[in-house]
Image 1 (cartoon, rainbow, N blue to C red):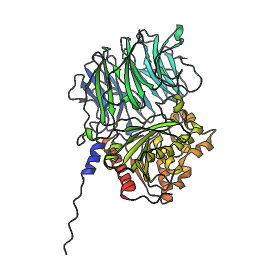
Image 2: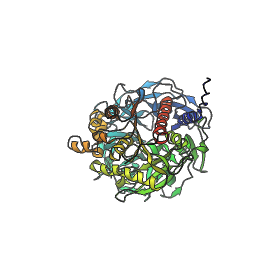
Image 3: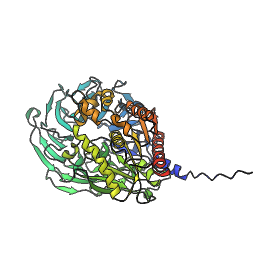
Image 4: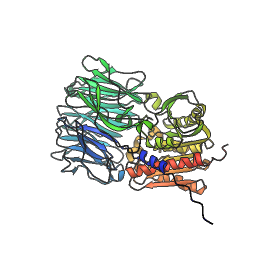
Length: 625
């Protein structure tokens, strides 16, 4: 008897998911001093590398071609070099390099090995490159500067915590450094380049943050963004006195509903571009620094700037008229845009590939407001699948940080879930940034239990909105979002049918013991002090409640991750296998904290979607009690 012909395999959907995961990105623009070219980072070659394009547009030229990713870039004000960070294996042991603008004469400035280095900025004459490093002491990131011509290394003060070189004075005499003794609290110092002596400019009591600082052309006036004197970050000005003593802070621009996310001062010192974080979306203003007059900027091409995810915001070219920035949106890839501040017109400079993906078919979110168990107002971004019944399956996605924020930029995993008929809700629970200083500190130490309780409020929000079938809710997240995912599965086992943990913390004791020493040092206020609060850390660690997990769990991790070491993933897998809970581990041998290589991004997205399709759609979840 002839066997029946098997049905044709419809592989259109897998191809669509792969196409979405392949959506490219162009970001981190840095302008040549003469304004004719712009260097930037892009994953056009399959891994983020350094590229260059004419300021008029055209086909870009690739300047680096490493197997390892390039993390950031900064063009020297002299025009001679482009500085960048190379991340071996995708890990945190970034190495500071310079290359000529034609891609030749590449030089590594740091020693290599396991030390961590982070690129900061150039001096105004292009002779000195500032960066932070833990070469001297693994428990801190010290600010240093290298003289490119002589190779001499300058040490810019020595304080506990992590540091960044914020700026060099135009006269070349001093530098500004931002020092963070612990997460959520920072100070601004002025450092004498002749002797390395540092003076504190922003003494304060309680937690407060200085986000950015820039010198005016006179080398004695400083512009800074901070929440020193308010709940939200604002723009202020300080005049230095004799021997670089701090003057009074003069507030120049503030909003009662938004943090100042980024600012840049024009080279002529006449105005600044301000970027506000308004409930997650960006708005721009321009301010006349002499008169203080604030002018509403043009509508932005995307909902968020690169500064929204910890990168660089709009920067002025030397003509003090042109701004260059990377923007994205929930349905818009990361691309470079040029703004003529005179006309208010944006011009798109790059076009990231999105082969096989119609951008107008991607789904934008709505902002959903809801309340926590204790009445605290919360919000989150709700993406409704066009192909899902209501109520239907929902994945709740928790952002990392924790002092970070869910923002509406293009997210391949969200969009791939949506075309499979799975809705996505991405909340900003307490402890998220962007909602004021008080809000971001509501999860510190023992208060973290309240952030975990917010998970239950997130579930109620999507159920009450009529979008979630209570039996078909999943949780996912990366880094601290992975912690929240594991907390969701252990604290609310009856509410979740599946979980995906991406490089998340599950055991604070092993995290503190094996993470980068400087990361452990600055995390004591945020999570708890392992020397004095060990019981608290155990209480907050999901690994000690893993016997409560009932949901099938997928774990993804980079083998070279030294921020959240791979031991965190291994504990989850071992304990769930012991208890015969369905679990899978996907380990990427060439990635660190996050996945940046195109083949790995495709695999991660595909496996996450597969997991949730199987456990939220194809197989009816077992009865939840």
